[in-house]
Image (cartoon, rainbow, N blue to C red; front, side, top):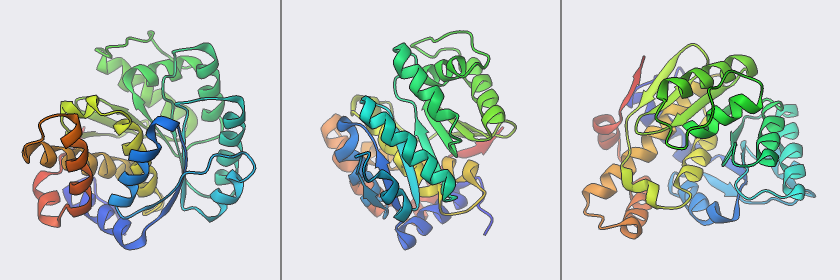
Length: 273
């Protein structure tokens, strides 16, 4: 089945996730584990949160996809991340890299650059992280701006990374950008209050991992569908009267669980260009 970069494609991906319940091995940070696992469950996927270097290869062997999130690094975890990525590539399974905080320290940047060389299917981060990753990987960058005001710079860095490493790169922002190095998809779903809930970015990247195994060879469209679905659920939670981060978090999970075809077709905002 050909997945469209559209609201209809978003619904098709969500429907497939609910029907097939892909198992996602999440090697992720302590802060994100709870909301990430619950996000995957609400979408119909199955989370595995193992991180021991002694079992990560076994979990990747039975999983549909792998997520690597570098939020809370340690040498042991880095070893497990590398083994997991290598196992995913060897097994022909997609894996997603979330380079959390890339650029904050030299160690973190070097770890992210090393993981990038292990051929992720998708890389997703904010503009600052993508700019820093491009620099750490030897690509073009004008430096890291924590406000990420230079959207064009981030997009150009993402396109360069995608072309150089043969992956899809997503840049989060007021409008999310997803590129394979040539095509660019833009996703305009979400609410600003999401930024006040820790690990929502980590969670949507896990959702990307759940979606990317559903339609082989279409990571660009699958990525955009996951971002739109998550953002739309947040919009509906806010419209229900969320008073702050706590009620938005609850409403977000509820709407991820209940989102209907009618709501997706009416509210998903994906465009190319």
